[in-house]
Amino acid sequence: MLETITRLSHEFGTSDYVKGGGGNTSVKDDMTLWVKPSGVTLAGLTPQKFVALDRVRLRELFEVKPPAEPSAREALVKDMMARALCPGSTGRASVEAPLHESFSARYVVHTHPCLVSGMVCSKRAEATCRELFPEALWVEYVDPGYTLCAHVRQAIPQYVAQNGQEPGIVFLQNHGVFVAGDTPEEIRARYDRIMGRLRQAYQDAGVSTTLTIGPAPTDLMVAEVTVRLRDLMGADQTVQVVGSGIFAAADGPITPDHIVYSKAWLHFGMPTAESLLVFQNAHGYMPRVIVNGRGVFGVGANANTAQLALELAQDGALVKQLAQAFGGLNNLDKRASDFIENWEVEAYRRQQAAG
Image (cartoon, rainbow, N blue to C red):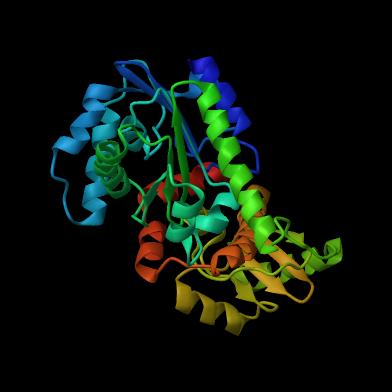
């Protein structure tokens, strides 16, 4: 089973399905759930890296009434998940492990394909989902983590009562998709159906599934932005910059992954001391993506985080483009965005990605 879920993780760990450390996978038997560690890429998984959780102890999470205050609630969840670790298992299980436990199916593969995001992040997301995927379970936006897991755990039995079987596909608004199945063939067939129907929908709407990107900026242009940022942010700040040609960037919070890796808001124009101060006062952080007439630039403490910021900005731009097929882009509200910005789990994931 671990060899099989590793192969599935690699198949769905490509850039068509996830970016950075996004997405998670699991496999289970009667007593144990093996799930992807937090912050580890799907493509980088090996059978030995999966975190083994005792399913009985993991289900205890749904038998307690968690605190209403978000930080206290998430601390309790983190502690209970740590106690569910099987002897000898190491690592930090994906925060969505309890959601994986809510499926009876043996294999679960959760990803964030851009083609899916174009639908689930659109203004007509629910109606489109019900039209294209009547067999799927649709879930309105819920904060990731325990709240989402508890919500889906209640929604699955309701689906079963109405349909006589468990959902094999669950779409999450402004988040992604869970696909479950008892065999790897079921997983692959369901993903093929998802991607095929969406490609056809974009084609019917006359919306390209490819993002147009202009000529790459020269090394001199990237160096100019880098030097300017280092001068403005101070010698104590480590700044790396990677550049891309111009594309129609999306501004505003889209999904948790976009907020984690490229932040919700972009800086437009060449940075100045005044513009950076205004940006930081408005959003509480320095920009991770800068857009100007010369290109789009990802900014990070190292080349890896800068590249991820740029990749998620490109992904966000394509999501915005695709969402035009379904009424346009639907951004997350400030409350939802702030929760992710301040969530300890995502801070941990950022730290892992920086490595």
